[in-house]
Length: 153
Length: 204
Image (cartoon, each protein chain N blue to C red):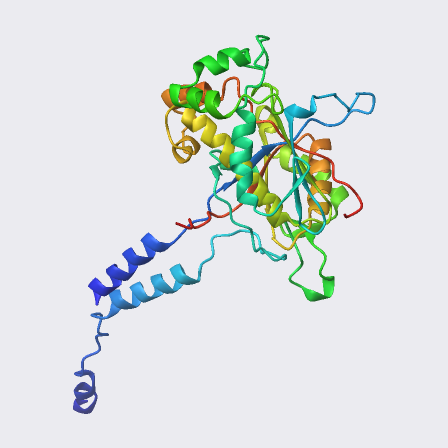
């Protein structure tokens, strides 16, 4: 019996002094790696900068539309339109706008704002086509999203 | 160790940018009805024409321009020209050009009296339209640069009218009644008339 008793005398506590550090490390790891975006970008997004920016107040009324050359090279180099997680054609814009409008309450439907995030390699042709469709869909408030330009002086 | 951790935590808290909804806003014209006449005759002098071809070359008021940043001054002078301010009340705010002129601060009136008032340029801000016509093959980057300049010109006018800088004007919070009144005062009689014309199909 005495043989067993001797063994159990060694300390079995796990040292917890470093526990807060481990927790902090984990916290930082997730803070650094987390990206605050719900959609995965399938198009290039190198957005031209501008100076005279206005901030939109009601985030709920904003729907995002991304335009740019696809990241997947097999899809060619012509700019495509991405909404949510899929590519749509120009004539699918109306349908998408109506879907977005359905998610808003009835009084807010006319106030829907389309935020266009467009890559700087895009030509105006597709932008004009999208705008014509938006007019047809009666979503007239648009915003060209742009990051702030650093001042020269 | 905990101190270092907190320091890092605060560092990241301060430097992290959460994507904000910032950009250049624009109101598209209503849907085109087929039976509606599209062409509305406007006096040439009341339209400030900006054209871009597929080579990204600018044509401003029928003259080539190399530097986009010059548009700001040109549009500022164009809108505030007051070549022939009328007494007809127009627009949402129902103010005539003459009333708009009288409401301007003295410094702006002096500038207009000394430098502007040309009969070749716009009659008054209520009728002044800035038209942008970009070719289908022109770049989006240049388009944004032009829109940025146009907004800069208008914001400068609005800001100066109520005695603040264009940057402060942009940051006015329209939910605050006092700032909203300031915003409305700045904009009454001077509509931001930026028209995006249908582009040409063939590049120049």
